[in-house]
Amino acid sequence: MAAQIKVISSMATRQILSDLADAFHQVSPHRVDVESIGGVDAAKRVESGEAFDLVVLASNAIDKLIASGHVRAGSRADLAESGIAVAVRAGAAHPDIGSETALRDAVLAARTLSYSTGPSGVALARLFQDWGIAGDIAGRIVQAPPGVPVGSLVAKGEVELGFQQLSELMHLAGIDVLGPLPPEIQILTTFSAGVPLACTQPDAVRELLAFLTSPAADEAKRRNGMEPA
Image (cartoon, rainbow, N blue to C red; front, side, top):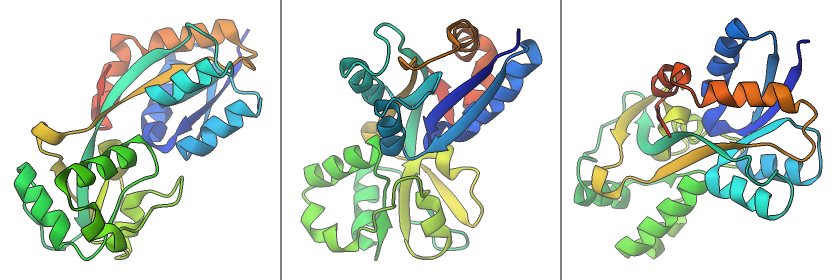
C-alpha cells in the first residue's frame, strides 16, 4: 500500500529533497511530503515528539538527536556534502574572492555582510576569529533569522556580501553568486537523514533512504550545488 512519508529538513536541502521526492514517486507508490524550515527549529520540532518519518539536517545535528534519544540509533544516512558560496546583489561590483587573502580583503571592505544561523555560519564566525577580524566587522554583520535565506537580504540591498550554502543561493533571483570559498578555506557540511522515534512508516522510509543514497540521486544533488556524500 502507498504510504505518505512526512519529512522535515533544513532550508539547505529544500530544493534537492523536492526534486528527489518527485523522482522517487516515479519509481515508488509512496508519496513524500517535505517541510523545510530553519535547521534549529526543525531539530526542536523533532525533539518535541512531533510525528515525522524522516529528518534531514547537518550531520552533527542528526548526531545530537540520536544522542538525545529522539532519532533512532544507527539510522543516520549521509546524503550530500555542501560548500559555502558568496553572493552580492545582482549588478553590484564583484570583489575578488579567488584566494584567502582576497576574500579577507573583501570581507573587510564590505559595509555589511551576512551568514546563516546554521553550521556554515558557526564555521564562518570561527574563520573570522582565526583571521583576527571578528571584532572589526562585528558591527557590520546582519544575522539572517532562522529560515530566512541570506540571499534574500542581499537581493533587497540590506546586505552587501552574503555567505551561505551554494544550494540556498543558486536558485535565488536578484543576486550574483561570485563562487565558492577558496579551496584552502572551504567549509563543507555533510547533510544526513535520520529516522525519528515518532516515525510511523518505517518500511516506506527504508525504501526512500535507499533511493536517496543511490546513484540515481546523484544528478539531482549536483544540479542543486551539492556532491553525493
